[in-house]
Length: 331
Image (cartoon, rainbow, N blue to C red; front, side, top):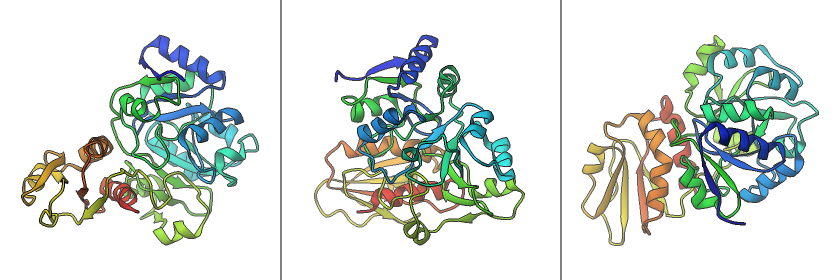
Protein backbone atom coordinates (compact mmCIF):
# COMPACT_ATOMS: atom_id res chain seq x y z
CA UNK A 1 0.00 0.00 0.00
CA UNK A 2 1.31 3.52 -0.82
CA UNK A 3 2.10 5.93 2.01
CA UNK A 4 -1.06 7.34 3.62
CA UNK A 5 -2.35 10.60 2.24
CA UNK A 6 -2.85 13.37 4.84
CA UNK A 7 -6.01 15.29 3.96
CA UNK A 8 -6.56 18.89 5.03
CA UNK A 9 -9.64 19.45 7.18
CA UNK A 10 -11.90 20.90 4.48
CA UNK A 11 -15.52 20.33 3.47
CA UNK A 12 -14.27 18.26 0.52
CA UNK A 13 -12.25 16.09 2.91
CA UNK A 14 -15.31 15.53 5.11
CA UNK A 15 -17.28 14.38 2.06
CA UNK A 16 -14.45 12.10 0.86
CA UNK A 17 -13.85 10.60 4.29
CA UNK A 18 -17.55 9.91 4.70
CA UNK A 19 -17.63 8.18 1.32
CA UNK A 20 -14.64 6.00 2.22
CA UNK A 21 -16.22 5.03 5.56
CA UNK A 22 -19.57 4.14 3.98
CA UNK A 23 -17.64 1.91 1.57
CA UNK A 24 -16.19 -0.02 4.54
CA UNK A 25 -12.72 1.54 4.42
CA UNK A 26 -10.71 2.95 7.32
CA UNK A 27 -9.90 6.63 7.91
CA UNK A 28 -7.75 8.11 10.68
CA UNK A 29 -9.42 11.21 12.08
CA UNK A 30 -8.86 13.73 14.88
CA UNK A 31 -10.79 13.96 18.11
CA UNK A 32 -10.22 16.28 21.04
CA UNK A 33 -8.50 13.42 22.90
CA UNK A 34 -6.26 11.52 20.42
CA UNK A 35 -6.43 10.56 16.74
CA UNK A 36 -8.67 7.56 16.08
CA UNK A 37 -8.62 4.84 13.42
CA UNK A 38 -12.23 4.91 12.30
CA UNK A 39 -14.36 2.31 10.56
CA UNK A 40 -18.08 1.54 10.24
CA UNK A 41 -18.90 -0.03 13.62
CA UNK A 42 -21.64 -2.29 12.21
CA UNK A 43 -19.53 -3.52 9.28
CA UNK A 44 -17.69 -6.64 10.48
CA UNK A 45 -15.07 -6.43 7.72
CA UNK A 46 -14.23 -2.83 8.60
CA UNK A 47 -14.00 -3.69 12.30
CA UNK A 48 -11.81 -6.71 11.53
CA UNK A 49 -9.48 -4.43 9.57
CA UNK A 50 -9.17 -2.07 12.55
CA UNK A 51 -7.89 -4.94 14.69
CA UNK A 52 -5.59 -6.13 11.89
CA UNK A 53 -4.06 -2.72 11.14
CA UNK A 54 -3.41 -1.97 14.82
CA UNK A 55 -2.31 -5.48 15.75
CA UNK A 56 -4.89 -5.21 18.52
CA UNK A 57 -5.96 -8.34 20.44
CA UNK A 58 -9.60 -9.31 19.96
CA UNK A 59 -10.13 -9.31 23.74
CA UNK A 60 -9.84 -5.50 23.79
CA UNK A 61 -13.21 -3.84 22.98
CA UNK A 62 -13.59 -0.75 20.82
CA UNK A 63 -15.26 2.59 21.53
CA UNK A 64 -18.07 3.46 19.13
CA UNK A 65 -18.34 7.16 18.27
CA UNK A 66 -21.73 8.72 17.54
CA UNK A 67 -23.11 12.10 16.51
CA UNK A 68 -26.44 12.22 18.37
CA UNK A 69 -28.47 10.57 21.14
CA UNK A 70 -30.74 8.70 18.71
CA UNK A 71 -27.73 6.63 17.63
CA UNK A 72 -27.13 5.69 21.26
CA UNK A 73 -30.72 4.47 21.52
CA UNK A 74 -30.24 2.32 18.40
CA UNK A 75 -27.01 0.76 19.71
CA UNK A 76 -28.14 0.02 23.27
CA UNK A 77 -30.84 -2.10 24.87
CA UNK A 78 -31.31 0.28 27.81
CA UNK A 79 -30.63 3.94 28.52
CA UNK A 80 -30.43 4.47 32.29
CA UNK A 81 -30.97 7.88 33.83
CA UNK A 82 -27.28 8.06 34.73
CA UNK A 83 -26.42 7.99 31.03
CA UNK A 84 -28.80 10.84 30.31
CA UNK A 85 -27.36 12.95 33.12
CA UNK A 86 -23.76 12.37 31.98
CA UNK A 87 -24.61 13.02 28.32
CA UNK A 88 -26.31 16.28 29.25
CA UNK A 89 -23.27 17.38 31.24
CA UNK A 90 -20.38 16.19 29.06
CA UNK A 91 -21.47 15.37 25.48
CA UNK A 92 -20.09 16.24 23.04
CA UNK A 93 -16.81 15.73 24.87
CA UNK A 94 -14.15 13.36 26.23
CA UNK A 95 -16.52 10.98 28.02
CA UNK A 96 -17.18 7.33 27.10
CA UNK A 97 -20.08 5.45 28.65
CA UNK A 98 -20.48 1.66 28.97
CA UNK A 99 -24.09 0.60 28.31
CA UNK A 100 -25.99 -2.64 27.61
CA UNK A 101 -25.56 -3.32 23.90
CA UNK A 102 -28.24 -3.86 21.27
CA UNK A 103 -28.20 -7.01 19.12
CA UNK A 104 -27.16 -4.89 16.13
CA UNK A 105 -23.69 -4.30 17.62
CA UNK A 106 -21.25 -7.02 16.50
CA UNK A 107 -19.64 -9.00 19.31
CA UNK A 108 -16.29 -8.27 17.64
CA UNK A 109 -16.74 -4.61 18.63
CA UNK A 110 -17.47 -5.43 22.27
CA UNK A 111 -15.00 -8.34 22.65
CA UNK A 112 -17.96 -10.58 23.47
CA UNK A 113 -19.13 -8.39 26.35
CA UNK A 114 -22.89 -7.69 26.72
CA UNK A 115 -22.06 -3.98 26.86
CA UNK A 116 -20.87 -1.39 24.36
CA UNK A 117 -18.65 1.68 24.87
CA UNK A 118 -20.09 4.86 23.34
CA UNK A 119 -18.73 8.39 22.97
CA UNK A 120 -19.87 11.59 21.27
CA UNK A 121 -16.65 13.49 20.39
CA UNK A 122 -16.43 17.27 20.42
CA UNK A 123 -13.81 17.84 17.70
CA UNK A 124 -15.55 19.70 14.84
CA UNK A 125 -14.00 17.52 12.11
CA UNK A 126 -14.92 14.30 13.87
CA UNK A 127 -18.46 15.57 14.36
CA UNK A 128 -18.74 16.67 10.72
CA UNK A 129 -17.59 13.26 9.47
CA UNK A 130 -19.94 11.42 11.84
CA UNK A 131 -22.85 13.55 10.70
CA UNK A 132 -22.01 13.40 6.99
CA UNK A 133 -21.47 9.63 6.99
CA UNK A 134 -24.51 8.89 9.13
CA UNK A 135 -22.57 5.99 10.66
CA UNK A 136 -21.54 4.93 14.15
CA UNK A 137 -17.76 4.71 13.96
CA UNK A 138 -15.52 2.36 15.90
CA UNK A 139 -12.35 4.40 16.41
CA UNK A 140 -9.57 3.25 18.76
CA UNK A 141 -6.35 5.27 18.84
CA UNK A 142 -4.64 5.34 15.44
CA UNK A 143 -1.37 3.68 16.45
CA UNK A 144 0.07 0.16 16.68
CA UNK A 145 -1.44 -1.58 19.69
CA UNK A 146 0.30 -0.75 22.96
CA UNK A 147 2.41 2.11 21.60
CA UNK A 148 2.13 5.80 22.46
CA UNK A 149 -1.18 7.30 21.33
CA UNK A 150 -1.07 9.81 18.43
CA UNK A 151 -2.01 13.46 18.97
CA UNK A 152 -1.12 14.80 15.49
CA UNK A 153 -1.72 13.60 11.94
CA UNK A 154 2.03 13.15 11.51
CA UNK A 155 2.14 10.78 14.49
CA UNK A 156 -0.41 8.60 12.68
CA UNK A 157 1.57 8.75 9.43
CA UNK A 158 4.78 7.83 11.24
CA UNK A 159 3.34 4.66 12.78
CA UNK A 160 0.50 3.53 10.50
CA UNK A 161 1.32 5.32 7.26
CA UNK A 162 2.16 2.08 5.43
CA UNK A 163 -1.05 0.34 6.57
CA UNK A 164 -3.81 2.86 5.87
CA UNK A 165 -4.66 5.15 2.99
CA UNK A 166 -6.20 8.30 4.51
CA UNK A 167 -5.54 10.55 7.49
CA UNK A 168 -7.69 13.63 8.18
CA UNK A 169 -5.56 16.43 9.65
CA UNK A 170 -7.30 18.36 12.41
CA UNK A 171 -4.19 19.78 14.07
CA UNK A 172 -2.85 18.81 17.51
CA UNK A 173 -5.41 17.25 19.85
CA UNK A 174 -6.59 19.68 22.50
CA UNK A 175 -6.83 17.23 25.42
CA UNK A 176 -4.06 14.77 24.55
CA UNK A 177 -5.35 11.95 26.80
CA UNK A 178 -7.98 9.33 25.98
CA UNK A 179 -11.52 9.82 27.23
CA UNK A 180 -12.81 9.20 30.73
CA UNK A 181 -14.74 5.90 30.76
CA UNK A 182 -17.72 5.40 33.08
CA UNK A 183 -19.70 2.17 33.32
CA UNK A 184 -23.41 2.97 33.68
CA UNK A 185 -24.64 -0.51 32.74
CA UNK A 186 -25.08 -1.73 36.33
CA UNK A 187 -26.84 -0.59 39.47
CA UNK A 188 -24.13 1.91 40.41
CA UNK A 189 -21.89 3.89 38.02
CA UNK A 190 -18.17 3.03 38.12
CA UNK A 191 -15.17 4.90 36.78
CA UNK A 192 -13.19 2.40 34.68
CA UNK A 193 -10.58 4.68 33.11
CA UNK A 194 -9.64 8.16 34.34
CA UNK A 195 -9.41 10.83 31.69
CA UNK A 196 -9.86 14.56 31.03
CA UNK A 197 -13.11 14.67 33.03
CA UNK A 198 -12.15 14.06 36.69
CA UNK A 199 -14.12 11.80 39.07
CA UNK A 200 -15.37 14.79 41.06
CA UNK A 201 -17.06 16.25 37.98
CA UNK A 202 -18.66 12.90 37.13
CA UNK A 203 -20.03 12.56 40.66
CA UNK A 204 -21.37 16.11 40.61
CA UNK A 205 -23.22 15.52 37.32
CA UNK A 206 -24.79 12.38 38.78
CA UNK A 207 -25.80 14.16 41.98
CA UNK A 208 -23.76 11.84 44.22
CA UNK A 209 -20.94 12.45 46.69
CA UNK A 210 -18.38 10.26 44.90
CA UNK A 211 -18.12 7.65 42.18
CA UNK A 212 -16.61 4.19 42.67
CA UNK A 213 -13.27 3.80 40.89
CA UNK A 214 -12.29 0.35 39.60
CA UNK A 215 -9.04 -0.63 41.29
CA UNK A 216 -6.09 -2.28 39.57
CA UNK A 217 -6.86 -5.63 41.22
CA UNK A 218 -10.50 -5.44 40.15
CA UNK A 219 -9.45 -4.71 36.56
CA UNK A 220 -7.18 -7.75 36.51
CA UNK A 221 -9.88 -10.07 37.89
CA UNK A 222 -12.61 -9.23 35.36
CA UNK A 223 -12.90 -9.42 31.57
CA UNK A 224 -11.69 -6.38 29.67
CA UNK A 225 -14.80 -4.18 29.72
CA UNK A 226 -13.34 -1.10 28.06
CA UNK A 227 -10.25 0.07 26.15
CA UNK A 228 -7.14 1.14 28.02
CA UNK A 229 -7.55 -1.27 30.92
CA UNK A 230 -4.62 -3.57 30.16
CA UNK A 231 -1.66 -3.26 32.54
CA UNK A 232 0.85 -2.30 29.82
CA UNK A 233 -0.28 0.30 27.32
CA UNK A 234 0.70 3.66 25.77
CA UNK A 235 4.31 2.47 26.04
CA UNK A 236 7.52 3.85 24.51
CA UNK A 237 10.24 1.42 23.46
CA UNK A 238 12.68 3.24 25.77
CA UNK A 239 12.93 1.91 29.33
CA UNK A 240 11.04 4.28 31.58
CA UNK A 241 10.99 4.86 35.36
CA UNK A 242 8.51 7.01 37.27
CA UNK A 243 9.70 9.38 40.01
CA UNK A 244 7.19 10.56 42.68
CA UNK A 245 5.95 14.13 42.35
CA UNK A 246 8.42 16.66 43.75
CA UNK A 247 11.38 14.28 43.73
CA UNK A 248 14.30 14.11 41.30
CA UNK A 249 15.90 11.25 39.37
CA UNK A 250 19.01 9.51 40.74
CA UNK A 251 22.51 10.72 39.79
CA UNK A 252 23.31 9.99 36.15
CA UNK A 253 25.41 6.85 35.70
CA UNK A 254 26.61 7.16 32.11
CA UNK A 255 24.73 6.49 28.91
CA UNK A 256 22.04 8.76 27.54
CA UNK A 257 19.29 9.52 30.03
CA UNK A 258 16.51 12.11 29.99
CA UNK A 259 14.41 13.68 32.73
CA UNK A 260 10.84 14.59 31.80
CA UNK A 261 9.42 16.81 34.54
CA UNK A 262 6.03 18.37 35.11
CA UNK A 263 7.43 21.93 35.14
CA UNK A 264 10.45 23.86 33.88
CA UNK A 265 11.65 24.45 37.45
CA UNK A 266 11.63 20.73 38.23
CA UNK A 267 13.41 19.96 34.96
CA UNK A 268 16.19 22.42 35.69
CA UNK A 269 16.84 20.86 39.11
CA UNK A 270 17.81 17.48 37.64
CA UNK A 271 21.31 16.14 38.40
CA UNK A 272 24.08 16.75 35.88
CA UNK A 273 24.20 14.39 32.92
CA UNK A 274 20.48 14.42 32.10
CA UNK A 275 18.80 15.85 29.01
CA UNK A 276 16.00 17.95 30.52
CA UNK A 277 12.43 18.36 29.30
CA UNK A 278 9.16 19.54 30.84
CA UNK A 279 5.46 19.03 30.13
CA UNK A 280 4.31 22.50 31.19
CA UNK A 281 6.14 25.76 31.88
CA UNK A 282 4.38 26.10 35.25
CA UNK A 283 3.34 22.50 35.98
CA UNK A 284 -0.26 23.03 34.81
CA UNK A 285 -1.69 19.51 34.59
CA UNK A 286 -4.07 20.24 31.69
CA UNK A 287 -1.08 21.48 29.68
CA UNK A 288 0.96 18.49 30.81
CA UNK A 289 -1.77 16.10 29.66
CA UNK A 290 -1.97 17.73 26.24
CA UNK A 291 1.82 17.50 25.80
CA UNK A 292 2.49 14.04 27.27
CA UNK A 293 2.15 11.68 24.30
CA UNK A 294 3.81 14.04 21.84
CA UNK A 295 6.85 14.46 24.09
CA UNK A 296 7.05 10.73 24.82
CA UNK A 297 7.16 10.07 21.07
CA UNK A 298 9.87 12.69 20.60
CA UNK A 299 12.02 11.24 23.38
CA UNK A 300 11.44 7.68 22.20
CA UNK A 301 13.04 8.57 18.86
CA UNK A 302 16.30 9.81 20.41
CA UNK A 303 18.00 6.52 21.23
CA UNK A 304 17.98 7.08 24.98
CA UNK A 305 19.17 4.42 27.37
CA UNK A 306 16.63 5.44 29.99
CA UNK A 307 13.82 7.92 30.54
CA UNK A 308 12.83 9.19 33.98
CA UNK A 309 9.42 10.88 34.29
CA UNK A 310 7.96 12.87 37.17
CA UNK A 311 4.64 11.40 38.25
CA UNK A 312 1.87 13.91 39.12
CA UNK A 313 -0.27 13.98 42.23
CA UNK A 314 -3.35 11.81 41.67
CA UNK A 315 -5.98 14.55 41.83
CA UNK A 316 -8.11 15.98 39.02
CA UNK A 317 -6.58 15.32 35.61
CA UNK A 318 -3.45 14.20 37.46
CA UNK A 319 -5.24 10.90 38.11
CA UNK A 320 -5.48 10.30 34.35
CA UNK A 321 -1.88 11.42 33.75
CA UNK A 322 -0.62 9.05 36.44
CA UNK A 323 -2.71 6.21 35.01
CA UNK A 324 -1.18 6.62 31.51
CA UNK A 325 2.35 6.92 32.90
CA UNK A 326 2.01 3.83 35.08
CA UNK A 327 0.83 1.77 32.10
CA UNK A 328 3.53 3.24 29.85
CA UNK A 329 6.23 2.33 32.38
CA UNK A 330 5.00 -1.24 32.95
CA UNK A 331 7.20 -4.05 31.61
